[in-house]
Length: 100
Image (tube, helix red, strand yellow):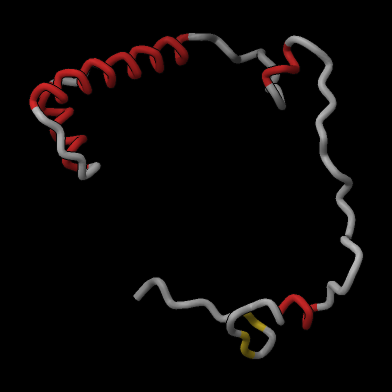
């Protein structure tokens, strides 16, 4: 899928980016290169490939540095945790309304 100049202009407008005519040609080439790379990646059959936790695992045995899932020492009571909140009511943290 190749982008034309109208596509690049529309993408720039949607991203609120001002680009000149010279930049538009360069951006068009770069975006088309990115799309070509994505098409190459999608063409690879990965059906029987096991996912890796890290790309280094393909080359060597890697021990992941994860800590044990344990309760941290100290005061972990509900009251102590709610004391850090900027606003609390009836044991719940109050947050600003973001949706009308």
